[in-house]
Image 1 (cartoon, one colour):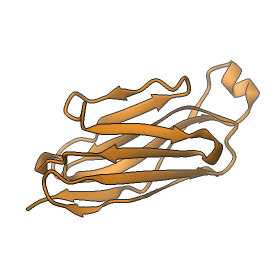
Image 2: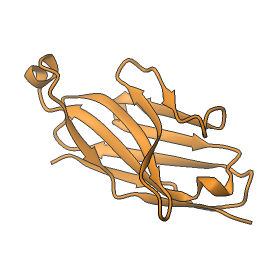
Image 3: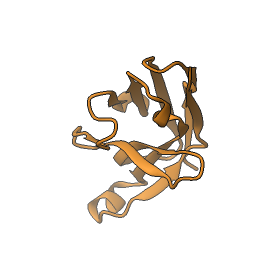
Length: 125
């Protein structure tokens, strides 16, 4: 069974920085993509950033220039460096992974998806 465990959340003042980490474990042949999503109180979960297997990156407009997603393939980890944090960045941040269980699944484009339990980020003065 594949699991994602996030860490690095917490409270910070506006303008501050935090770095989130997500460790994937379990039976993973390879990744299709990994990413970060967030859900603020009373709002729907939204995409923050993704990093597909080719290493390209995608960001929500609201975080472009402030957040940076990266991954360590050898360690099955993905990170989110968050700078210049704003109160509107307050949310529970979830790690997401789309992965293949074997070569045949990757060949056929059949990936599975897993979510982490979430880590709370609070930006407040």
